[in-house]
Image (tube, rainbow over all chains, first blue to last red; front, side, top):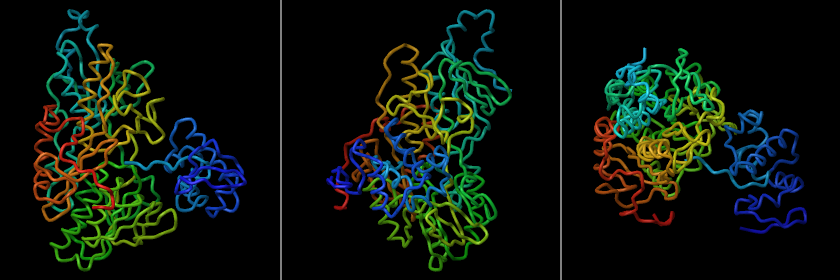
Amino acid sequence: MTTATISATSVDRDAEGFLTDPQQWSERLAEEIARENGIEELTERHWLVVRFMRDRYLTTGSAPSIRSLGKESGVPVKELYQLFPKGPAKLAAKIGGIPKPKGCI
Amino acid sequence: MPDRGPRSKLGVDANKEADMAKKQIVILGGGTGGTMTANRLRRRFENDAAEIHVVDRDDRHVYQPGLLFVPFGLAHSDEIVRPRRRQLRSGIAFHQRGVESVETDTNRVVLDDGTVLPYDVLVVATGVRLQPEETEGLSGLGWNERVFTFYTPEGAEALRGALDRFDGGRLVVNLVDMPIKCPVAPLEFAFLADWYLRERGVRTRTELVYSTPLDGAFTKPIASQRLGGLLTQKDIELVTEFNAGEVDGVGGVLRAFDGRELDFDLLVTVPLHGGAAYVERSPGLGDVLGFVPADKRTLQTPAKPNVFALGDATDLPTSKAGSVTHFEAEVLTENVARYFDGRDLDTSYDGHANCFIETGFHKALLIDFNYETEPLPGRFGPLPLLRESRLNHMGKLLFQWVYWHALLPGREVPGLGPAMPTAGKRPVPVHAT
């Protein structure tokens, strides 16, 4: 675990850059993490997904898979990949300040 | 018409009082989990203590591990399918009907002909449904011509023909996304394809590709490393983090959501899996993919205390595999009895799973694991773990007999219990192997 200073706030992140304490998250921080990962600006569609992931994690204790995200968030899987290239669930989780989604077995 | 169950044998008027006390157990699904559970419960409860009903829309029980061998001509689909009702003990009513919905608030199941089955305990064992239509183009042109799945008897037979005609080119194996039944099956397919094509003398003009949405050959680190090593040894290209989004079955292109493309002459796919369709029509029973949430130790569902679930139908974080279902059935049967008695439930299911992994050339690996412990090397009784051996291959072949004659009837099999054994296993750091 490392401590990084983003937006003049010190936050704890794991080796892959996921926040270890979701309470340290803020919208400004989300924008910074997004930029770090190649997303210059978070659009409304980005925010819809990020908030959906974060709310789901905070209420149920686990983040949805890409498939459930595509079905429940109202953003189709294809668009999820356009918004968050490579790994929508991972990247949206990272930007939303929640732990890396666990893979299936 | 449903079979005549125990109730009709008794004569309703004369035994009305006894009938009132008689428990109604309804089991949805007559596959591995439903059949084992029904037979175990039938042994556990006298006929006048409980009525047991099993519902399934058809009468074809498939020995699913056998499907892997069909494309290579090592088994015929007729040999791995038997009538469902013949696997059920006497005193179990079989209803050959689809399920319309489950009403958990009134404890009723409605069948597709309008028949209503009231229950005291419901067991959900309807497995998964393949959803090729959820991937753009997958079930369109080229399906069963250039694009196949061996996850159904019909698909496995069609693939046998295609492999027989295959004369070299690019053979791509792909699993669209997890969760899938038997997560090692697509790997086994790739290993066996390598063996089969070598035997036929066309391997040298074949590029064999294994593409997966995972970041390695398998989900758990040590097994992933060993299985990845086997892919390299057999000259099978591994493409990871490949999330298939679109298939062009005529042009022979598999496209990932991130834009990467894999050309193919033959595509062997494992389509997306979801729960049975009625789950979505049953408020509060399942999740958005149709899987049924259940307690990972007791198998009771959060939907209602008198509803239990097992096997592929659940959302549990363990493999969707027959061995898992078998171990779950033991705990579930105990818990149905405890629920009726008002006792605390048995919390002993630990996620135990074991699977033979065919690697071709008459050899197989064996893995054994649970929620906490990943597959480790060592021994499972006489069988070596995570290591290729002929004995494991023999074990896999013999298993079909054990399945029909011991597991489904609900007989105890020595050495195969719900709790994962630790004797004979060696913990190893991932990079030391």
